[in-house]
Length: 262
Image 1 (cartoon, rainbow, N blue to C red):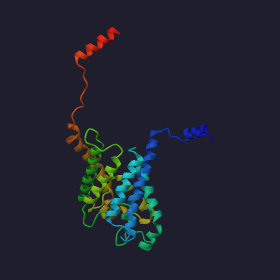
Image 2: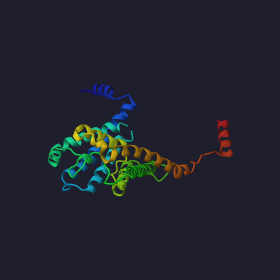
Image 3: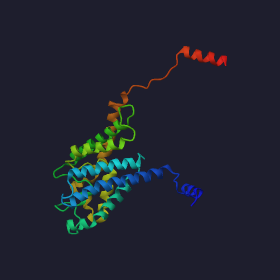
């Protein structure tokens, strides 16, 4: 195959629509996030913590976020990526799911496996407290991201942003995961939850925890807005204006005289 044929083939396969490009990038990035994140949960739970623990779950999601950001590059189709990522994890550990629960896919109880994919509240956690938990967690994440990418602040070195964002997820994981984990992303929680509803866990995934399912969907959206507003009002609004290079009258006069001579 000659160079010209390869070039024409590439032109035919190259997408023209920016929306479709963003869809594919975000789809693949979220797929990777769920594959590594939920995969680390599945390995820990299904092995009954013989091949993992809570800290390995935190590392799984941290590295998943970092690699997803490197892959997607900030360009949105998160929901579908989360749904198919959950499916990949289920297929990967299908036999382990069967052995763990005797073939019964349950949402609550000692052999519950629905929590591998989506978040569920700890016992006696109220919906209000859970909602506040998600607002604070998502707000903290947005605050960190805005600081990391703010070039008028210290910021992160170019190319290191995904790593530092991943470390921000780790900080949230080790300090705010007691109540319900740290979904802090509507698509990350809702997509896998819908997958479990369709894959055999049933409608209980929406009724468990007193109808918990809406909290990790609405809470992060509210928290994201709150975090952005706080950063703008307390940091970004107060950045000094960039200096403008005004030329004094003498320099302007010199330029005029030089042009006149030429």
